[in-house]
Image (cartoon, helix red, strand yellow):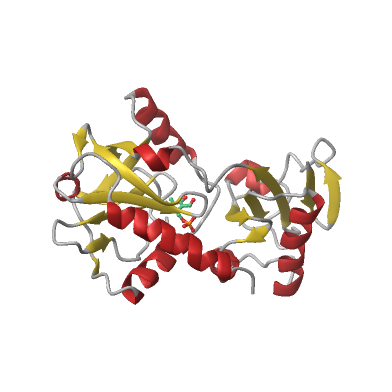
Length: 283
Ligand code: PLP
């Protein structure tokens, strides 16, 4: 693979970041993941906007302007002849003597790499995934997409240890989100329920698109928190993320959701999202 590092295009084995980089020492870095289908960027405008927001919450500046950033995304797809998969982007505060105070002089480190992956043809889509509920023990600013991913990684490991595919995290009795996706349910009455945006969850770009597509299609949407108990009694459950689009959840803590099979509204939202984003991709 050819990766991008601070203005240079390098073979992946040649790209090196300092041991003093604050992304490495403090998780002082933000990231984005953008899906690529047919060589095109999916929902790029949303990811670029959220990146700016994450940076500004951490008083970090993007090393590239908006046009240059889009060009680098297009160029990395071209250089790697990427047809389907994802682009990972990370910006850290850069290298400086280790100090809790943000260094004034550090120059941000910008890294992009690609990962080829079949995102459209995901076998889990036909079966649905099993989730278990676990306490949400992440920090309190989950709205910022930082690389501080240790707890989500531990939670996913615990879910896998229990024989499931992922965890739904629970705080004060309500589901926040999955380890790397937003969580949604469909009530027996056909209403799509999703937790409102706050510091408790990441404002998913796919979540925003799905909510707006659902509203546009006349599907009732309620933005409110829901409990694991309500989710287990729901008609359908699903998760959304850049590379999973809408993916059915068929069991929660071993309890089948609805009839235990992927639900029709989830499939409809997935199809709507893919059709819509394939025509409405790059700015
Ligand atoms: N929530 C968390 C914690 C995530 O890490 C992610 C993305 O990976 C999402 C939600 C979904 O966000 P998006 O749809 O922008 O990929």
